[in-house]
Amino acid sequence: MISSIEAITLENEFGAHNYHPLPVVLAKGEGVFVWDPEGKKYFDFLSAYSAVNQGHCHPVITQALVGQSHTLTLTSRAFYNSVLGEYEKYITEYFGFDKVLPMNTGAEGVETAIKICRKWAYEKRGIDENKAQIIVCENNFHGRTTTVISFSNDTDAKKNFGPYTPGFIKIPYNNLEALKEALKEPNVAGFLVEPIQGEAGVVVPDNNFIKEATELCNQANILFIADEIQTGIARTGGLLAVCGDCTCLSHCERQASYTKPDILILGKALSGGSYPVSAVLADNEIMEVIKPGQHGSTYGGNPLACKVAMAALDVVKKEKLAQNARTLGKLFREEMNQLVADFDLFVKVRGKGLLNAVVINDTPDSDTAWRFCIALKDNGLLAKPTHGNIIRFAPPLVMTEEQLMECVGIIRKTASEF
Ligand SMILES: *Cc1c(COP(=O)(O)O)cnc(C)c1O
View (tube, rainbow, N blue to C red):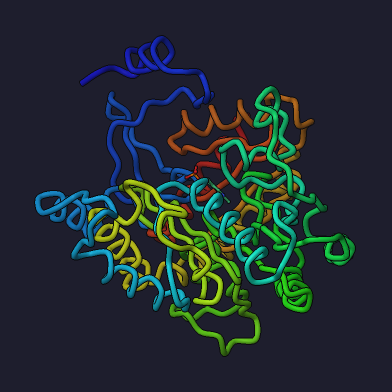
């Protein structure tokens, strides 16, 4: 087996430097654990940015992947395949939409939603061609493509990648007044938003924000587009973050807190980390604007992806991962609040379900959060700073209460030594 030093040296020499990883090499994963080549074991508290909600190498998902890979992997959409229709029925019933458009990565899902929204605006709303505007939020993260970074306000993500795609209005997050004002602008076609801003540092909006924003969009007859690539699929304690306080594991519209987006974007945990699978869901009157030849992807909807996604979604239901995220999340924040009280290092903890973050008591440009993550790594827990002085804590949802308490112990020990 390659050593950690060798693996890091190879990446540094032959890979583009578009990431700045924590100096740890992962060679194996199982459930909530990962191991480096030297055999040291760690708790994974990032879960590949919430792609591995079901835990590393979940046997049911692995079996689906391996099984289908012996049978048929890719046909392209030039032909029908024997799994796609079954998957489309499965996922649309699972989330309560008429139709799905399958893609591969999250950013592609967002691009797809933007294209659908614009086309809907011209063909169903009569907005003048090339004039449609989509409202987005400050500090958003929706991916890395040229159009998506055009409405980012992260300088690293954006600088020297212009010229940028026009047609976006940016408003502050969690601000209904700003949304109302923006809706008065001409040619508004949609509102694209993360129900909780993950990359921005797990920013949880006010309780009524999503529900009222949806209602404002409905009144204005524009599309409410929820990017649940990170928050969806049980991470925040419900099936989706837009489920609000509804704890049921199936799609339902009876609960008062549920708000149905016009377009729902999923990715990451849709495959449980085994394969890139993303999806855009909408009802017929929206999805029907897409006709043959107008959008697609060679790998989108391939039989391997379809089998993997069905297995990954099955695991979420069978293992009650949403409930577990809810219960453990509450416990985690209680425990972390104790640490916030005990250590000056921590300012506060925030989050929902098992998507949480701790704000470190230092300036955003300090390296305190980074150094604390290195210390956590040395003590056997992997987490990564986001936006300088914030550390995201998002373990796989298959964690047990006992394991979570062990992790809180590691964080406490690390803080006391720091
Ligand atoms: C990760 C993420 C994306 C982009 O997904 P990729 O698979 O990395 O392209 C988009 N939106 C949100 C909210 C994300 O967390």
